[in-house]
Image 1 (cartoon, each protein chain N blue to C red):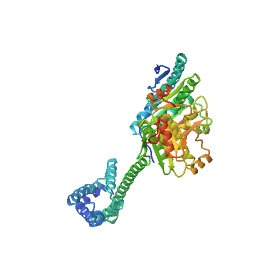
Image 2: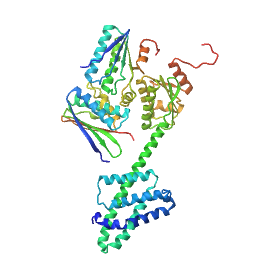
Image 3: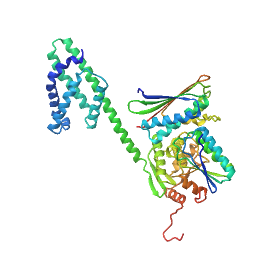
Image 4: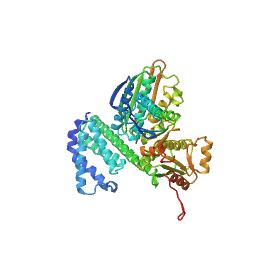
Length: 277
Length: 119
Length: 138
């Protein structure tokens, strides 16, 4: 049965269906919260009517799909959970089923009509869920970007001396982020030296060591030097046992020594007050 | 074919690469630089690549080799102005940076070559 | 995930200047796809390395550069095809251990590290086709 053939039936019952649909939504405290006032209720009821009739347009093209995706994304944005969305569709179906059964006496015909409608509603639901998932991944991506930024806090210790205290595990994704952030900051600050403090990195395996070497090499290429500090005994042992060649790296045990070395590179030093130069 | 201009400042030769370097331009550039070192007896060579947004392994090798050749002829080479994205790309590809002297910009490179900055 | 091709351009690689053309096209597509400076440099360098391989090793060929989409991400897919001698010792080339004057050396293994997808089909005496794809970061 073509869905468009159901349109007259839909038009006749539109107001009643939409009204009982909102009775349900407004009757539940969880969903009631989404409709703060009468104006909002009036507006969404209008939208709902055109949405409802849209189901029976018998048109299922790209514009239709995009419209449904937009609807799903909107619900994700306002924080309406998918269970309510799915529940709403189910409510629609049961409201319509009552009317189809009442108006189409032939059981086979009524079944076919309901089946067409069910197919369309299922399609709508899947589009909406797709939109939910995509929107969710989007916010997840934004959060991850924010976390990445926080995890690469490049600090200006002195004119032309930068410090990056690395804390936590380093995977290759983060390592790349670290390299890029560091390179951009070195150029922006015209840095002469970068101190990379790895005291807060729990595990340094071959991969992490390789990332550190690569970052050092890249910093070299743009014209600055890297000083590695905070190498614990454990980490030193691992690096050597793994056979990683770190001879190209300048290392200092403590951060303070790293800073002293960096200052030397820019022709400065730390001296007790009162000392004659 | 586009040739890259080479300037002389005292004992130092300066060249800024701005054109999209294709292989033959890169090779010609190397030849020109070495020729100028031979003719002028320059002690320093400063190559500014801040105008390059791509340096593939071929061009990188030509630049690195030029530095080594210049050293054999008694000139010290400093490569300056490499962009962050170019540096990251070369390193990710596994390009070795041994034997290449670098500086942030032309000012600093010149300071190194003229002995104003001890490195 | 299905990949949709939004736009496609082909460039013959018949001379050294074509390498620069391939690079420029890659740059334009990277900009259109919203690549950041780092991803864009990686893409252009990969284009340059692969085009050089087609030119020097394959004796010339064809580059096809496409703007692609896989639903959420934008990307650039580049195909380089030649009818050259093929790459006899592919495994070693991909490891980056090759050091011939033709500079197959780091080009191939390095390119692989710059892109998200790398596929190669090479047959002795028949030629080589390399397909690389780089996506925008998410």
